[in-house]
Figure 1: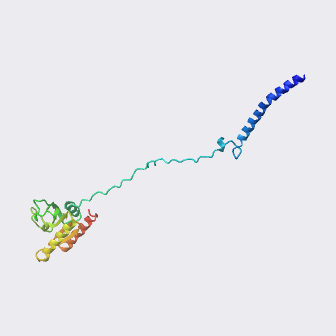
Figure 2: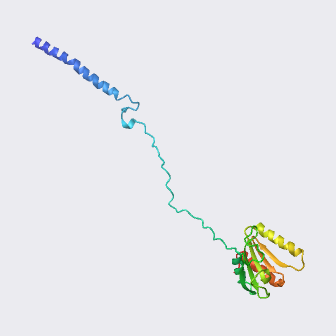
Figure 3: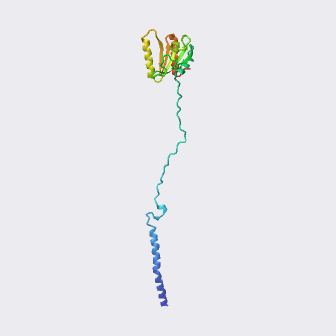
Amino acid sequence: MQGETMTQGHKARRHTPSAVAFVGVVAVLALGGCNSPDGGSKDSPSAAAPHPASTMTGPTAPSSQPSRTRTQPAAVDRSAASIAKAMNGELSSVTKTIDLTEDTDGNNLLGRPHQYTSATVLVDKNLSCDQSDPGVDCGATIEVFAAEPDAKARVAYIDSIISGSSLFTEYDTRDGKALLRVSGDIKPSLANEYKAAFVRVMSGQGA
């Protein structure tokens, strides 16, 4: 029995190292779980530092509102014919208007450099004239130039003629590139009506 007991004792001592090794592994695993300062595993998702969310800005979407288009005002007709026509509607003494051409312009200036580009005669019932050769002597004439300096030069030229002769006179009114010439045979009161109608038409208030 003693020998048997010793045999069993040897068997027991033979198993002792395995048991110690097992306990050592458990201890190592337990210590490994304590490596993190907060007691959690360093591989635990809850222990990982959160990553700041990145914001990506895409291209700005085009505005859905329709673009506004500025409407240009319609060009105003400032030809001699249009001015004379409007004045004719305001002056009861005017019987007709005659648009001059290169062939009917008695001054032979229509269309020439720095001269008027259009001209129209207003025939007044208070005067008599040769309507086959119409001019300011029929009542009044509208002359329109391409540039305002040309109109100013025309006024200065006519004024120089009037100043040097007592036999020739007329009432002249300029507005921008347009010139109204009224015959000196028209009474001053009627000449003022021509001027007032011309000013109203050029300001856009005429007929």
